[in-house]
Image (cartoon, rainbow, N blue to C red; front, side, top):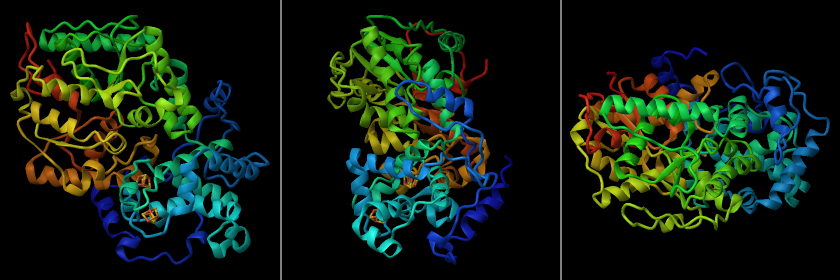
Length: 543
Ligand code: SF4
Ligand code: SF4
């Protein structure tokens, strides 16, 4: 889908009708229906993908069919309302957080202007408090005494098809980034409410293809790209050939090797597409430099988990392969690559969903002896923690001048930053591998970081204008340091970010490239016996 010219969109974001520019909606929000039109919704799940998934054990994704959000009739099951209300009742029983979030919002408004979708679209229903209210109003009507007696006067709403459509619209205009929750005095996590909305919608067959096709691929081949084990291994071997051509260093990774000390799992985008492949080359060089005893798996060949964007049951099923493969291979612990949402799943859900992983050891770096106590329950360490520890102990020989072409800033990816507290380690890495880098403005980094705007399976072309709008606050902060300090590189530790931010930068801040931090580590590493060419663009240099 063609996107409007950058000047026009910039004017529209800043001057278009929104609460921020003084335009007040003329109708009550409950009386404002959603209107689907090309560009404001992502394509729905292909029936064959949904039918395939519905047949898998542990997963229920019923009502596969051809349909479009623009259709009047969404071809819902006859008893759709009963399914939704029963689904909500089940989840209120199972998830204490949902029950609390439904009850405790005081409508203080602190979250209202913190969401990048609201800032980019000006749509009042994109205020986090309103997004939650779409579900809360139904909860009030059917699950609280005041709602049952007073209905609309108590903020309740009878569940209707119109509300279901509204849920679909706004559950897929939230990237579950959790920025709003940082500012909420009650810690209400709107991301979890969005997760529940998406889960409820799936009960009646409503979902988007850009989420469900990766889920199906991950279930079938182990990774969301759908790479076969042979293709996965072949791609990594191609990268090893590139490394040898560029640096003279011969790298010999192993695959599915039983008895290795460490199992390494990274997003499959790292072995498949630019700019992730340069990050992957960085991992390969790093492990070679320190002589790590590790193996890749062609079965657990994906760190990312699109189940997080679908439902708890799908998330659990896709995550299960990590521990299962670690057990099969008999490794001691797991090292994970640069990914965002993978780490939310690993850090916050894996242990209780598929653990405890008693068969693994608490991770201990074989190079420095550091025991990663923070990973006691998951037995899984983030590559940035691992690398920062190597740097702290002086175990890497680095030449910063090899990154002389880079003037960097750092984007805190939402999940590592807000879900894991991974704030200092990436900065430590940057300090060691580049001469100079700058921070973006204070309110746009660390816990307050702005989302790329296209996470949670929204990285799809048919909603490009929406993505450019929701990514605007992030891009605006990059533009500031680009204009003021000449920044030309946006570093991050997330595979989805590497893809989405590249598109975002090409649109809003041309001249800024996106990279993983491990790429910058790989650029700077000095390895014994190397015969490095003159790499003016580091590992990206075409020779
Ligand atoms: S900040 Fe929290 S309590 Fe205040 S309106 Fe938002 S969700 Fe409700
Ligand atoms: S989680 Fe992120 S995208 Fe969703 S409402 Fe909050 S700030 Fe907006």
